[in-house]
Length: 360
View 1 (cartoon, rainbow, N blue to C red):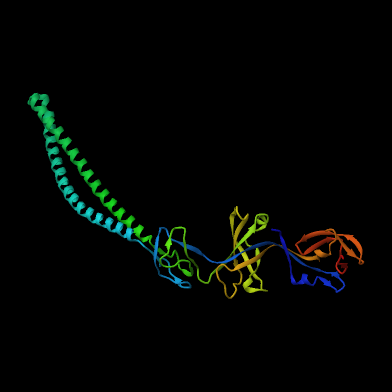
View 2 (cartoon, helix red, strand yellow):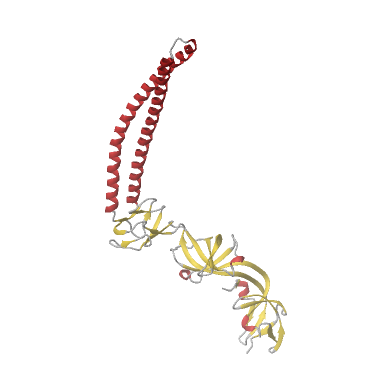
């Protein structure tokens, strides 16, 4: 796309056209801009998709309806998911019964641990006493070894009981967590068969009918923020380096023929679409038109610079791209500045008030 130049109302009278093909040059204002095209979109506008395959059983909304966040929109057949959830719930209930049995075993094991601890304390006390008197030969070597062996066995039994108690507690925790997670997964899977709105807004259109087979690639509806609109525009890669945040945009739409609306660049997507070789930008209207709808087409001119006091002529009055006719048939060389497909700025070679003639 080429850069376009748009001229203010002053410019339209900067050259006085006569019936005999004469133009009298006057100073005016010339504005350089970059062309862009696109559509009007609702803020946060998005297309609704399902995350599962299935038959669309019920549509809970209609086009034009206000939507709340989390509101059900579509119901997809979910008999298999319901059975999975029921099965997971039964497994969870069974695990609760097993957990009560495990808890009883834990209580028994805790008692066993306490008894082993008490036995260890007693055997350790006997062992320590006999160890102290062994040096005085009051106890035989055989008796001492029996006492020592009893202490070691008590210690081993106590440690084994502690380990078994720890394993039972871990088993209980894992079984509780596993059954609960499986139930949550089944419930989440079933909830996927109910398509809900991601945020509050307005439902602009529904694309499907009840009974249709849908997949995660099937568009179901389009939703956006109510009474809040923006412009989504595409700019050619050759012009993109000149576009900056905050620049003014002049917008025209087929729905408002003859009217120009002002907008401002407020977002630039920093990646090029390889297919169209364009960059996407977003802009907001300075003053929103009275009535807008999503996907209205728009053409825009992003203002790059404005020059006041410029001399301009129609391109049709140029000869060989660098001359004009003065005194009806005398060629004069001029220096061209900014130009578009209709007009050209004259930097040198002409003055305000001079008359030029259209080539025959």
